Image (cartoon, rainbow, N blue to C red; front, side):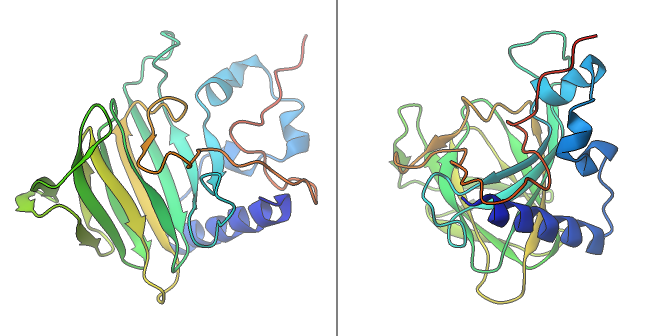
Length: 229
């Protein structure tokens, strides 16, 4: 992805978050220049990849397949000094945008429509060897338990949510009209490096970046090491 595109997406997400009345933590607005002076006292942000994150799933078609997100809080399954067993994120998808089909083996999460457009989430049961099953899926949504056929697109209007259990294949689909959607994610501890299993094996998690302009915000995998004292 071009850095200019990433910069614009972050600005668009900031505007949508503000429109929906959600406040971000202070580190959301740190510039690359600010980061040069951020010391070891903020290693939790670095170690747990808090902050801005943009993905086109390595496909180079962000406007069709991709999303942007901001990780507000997260634990760490490898570094025991971080005790949080939970995580919280905000995600944005533009109208007409989708996210790649995937499941998590470790993480259970709730996806909440925080405002804007509707979103549809396609659900399938998956297996430990990454097969997709043609079996009924148990769906928990805002206190209701239901059984739906494989491949059902569950519609979430603003305020509605769905629980994504381990090995449940899911994607995100936003209607072609109606604007962007802001999603919340409340989950168990998140590990994006090892706990995303994509149905399409050509898909990746973090994009290659064409540096055509200066970064507006650093992404969560771009933070510099703390300056020595």
